[in-house]
Image 1 (cartoon, rainbow, N blue to C red):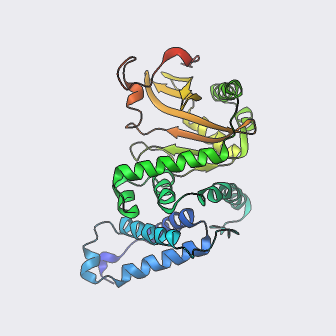
Image 2: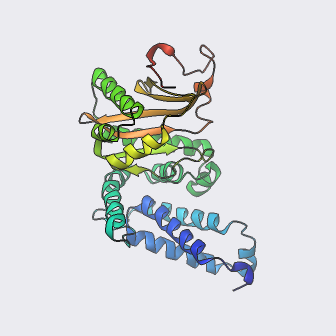
Length: 307
């Protein structure tokens, strides 16, 4: 090994863990994830020394390679069904291990839902929404243009929402959204948890442009904690109800600028999925002056904020 290849052990382990996470979310199986990562490193070591030196970002190269291998396996007609999923990264014990196992158990609901997506939709969604990869990296892995990958991820989100959501009467959805807002205003973790499905999932889309969570959060308590942390009271911050995707959602503002748009998917009288848009590019239309072409803002459905 060349001295230039020397890497701290913590970085090596974190790199492998990241690749395992990517492969696990794309394939839904620990064994297949291990196989993909092993194959990824085999391909790395098949490169000549000169070829490896030309790779300026090895972790990015490895992630792209792992993503392509996963996509190939997803598209293979003989790919075994995920069915019985093995434990994922269950190397910890005690309370931390119990929490990890709970998150894993809850994530199976989402992983099972992902099985209904096409390989390209699943790849675009996982790489973009779960791992927050750069659009050009997602496009490179999926083999489509960036706009096509955006559309694939949108199709995946719509499909997942259709699977989890039951058509809820507007008045029930409105009441639940307003209850979520009250719980956030009062920083009431117990109330907020009670409004969420036990296997609720929250997605945070920062687009790599704000320091947001890059992976989904699973479980009612974990989702409640994440939302309360994100929406903690601060001066010049407001939280209002507003129409989002034709249903009542939440809008968080800082200094009158929209900082987060939150949509809620409801199933069985509880919030099943929470979608938090923090990406400044996607919030641009929300920050247009009222009446400006393309503006999504309308004062008609806003509630009282906090200050």
